[in-house]
Image (cartoon, rainbow, N blue to C red; front, side, top):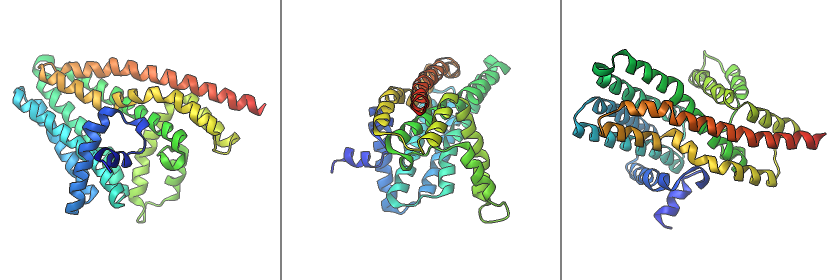
Length: 305
């Protein structure tokens, strides 16, 4: 079996991964995972290393020296390889844990918080308070919503393509029910704390997709949670063109613009890009997705009548 075939086996679907992802991110991550497997390293240890390395890149982006900036770029790329490796290693070894899943989701937030902090400190002498306001808008308002919707649409696509077992798609209502079933004064307190924050993340995804929420509810209530093979294939066809946009909104393109803006000495461009170009893409993607979801919703309701 070739290296490419082995890497593909560790991916949920080629639909949600670009060729760039396969060769530049997933393949190096897989090679690191093989090394960690031979060394007996636990996936959580890999995640922690990813967090530390990615966070350290913020210091190097703070510097105005080009060589230091290049080190920061290399560190963030390295951290992203480890971020891929931890999940691949967990699947290869069967060492999947709740804390690992939490830390994996937390990693990117830590990286970019440190990077935003470094860039703001670097630009404060020229921009003053305005760079902090721009970064707050780009990071807290735009970045979070863009990554959340990109992740959500990938999981929706996988749900239609592979079914419930092939996707991490969940509703905030299901998470609330699980949250209330757990007790604080028990060994389940950590899982309960995780759900406390994850419920809000899921709600932010649902708030951006009102038509899909009605469609998903109709599928559960009127179709018993099952859709026909014909609908699966048609939904995949409609959803597939949006998958490259989900990758743009999450890491690859975002990181590329960050690297370029730092290398040319104008890091503020990254914040403007997040607040404008990526926001336009987010709105466009949501409009397209909601439109074809309405089409399937109309099919289900008209068929029932």
